[in-house]
Image (cartoon, rainbow, N blue to C red; front, top):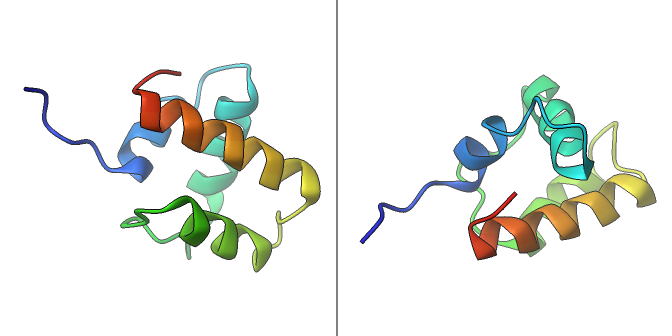
Length: 74
């Protein structure tokens, strides 16, 4: 059985992708206040809404990215 990878760690590995996942990763890695222990989509969206990069476009990317994370993909 594979070990669980926290969302932040999983996302950081995707920072080089030219995709919505990579875009979000780059935004998150610049955010010194990002909660590295985020465990739910709601917590992720709440943080993003309160951040400087909390646009509707970024929120949509976050939803897509979280679904990919849950599936264990990109």
